[in-house]
Amino acid sequence: MSDVLDSKNGLDPQLVLGAYSVGVFPMADSRDAASVYWVEPRRRAVLPLDGFQLSRSLRKTIAADRFQVTVDTAFERVVQLCAESVEGRPETWINEGIERVFRTLHAMGFAHSVECWDGGKLVGGLYGLALGRAFFGESMVSRATDASKVALAHLVARLRTGGFTLLDCQFQTSHLASLGAIEIDRADYVALLGASLDGALKPVSAAGVSAAAGDFRALDRLAGKASASGAVSGPVAGKVIAQLLVQTS
Image 1 (cartoon, one colour):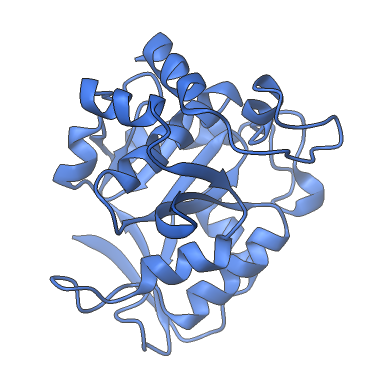
Image 2: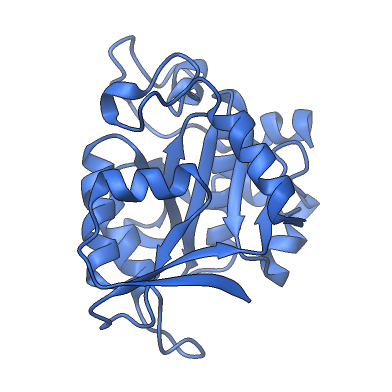
């Protein structure tokens, strides 16, 4: 079980950032829930960035650009897609309060999304929070075969290129395990988290991010898709992603 603290207060962005910095995150009982509770799992799922399991079939899908993969171009739509009820999962833990605070965190530059498109239609992706050299994966979604796997592969390549050291997946699932995620005890997670945040957040605020933080846009510059100002000219080619993952898997 998880340690749970009830909270009926609104979600303040600084409160949320502070919670993640000590290993706690908010969830809701349902999409329509008016409040959230705070969770600190006794066992935590993490995906070692050098341990992503790239199958031959997934590598071919990525290299062939089966999906057009973008970053931070449809953040709100990805969150909404993750929050939708689907067959087999009638309720989700993303309520309006969580959705609202993550929109704010995205505007502040902390929250990011990876989107997978097929013929101009959003068919999958993921979103999460970047703090220091840690990325906290919140949710991923797939409306087409392998879309969430491709999104996660792109994220792993991006995090490795940007100097991140921790990819937090919160709870272990068979899907995540098949891609290389492992479960660790809370104490081990706290140690990894502390190392990933060391020197990066003093204090936890937009003004507190220092050079010790990971660079979420490093991959775009490496692939020639971003200018010095950070403007992105287009998606990173799947062949580049596949090559990076082969080098690090």
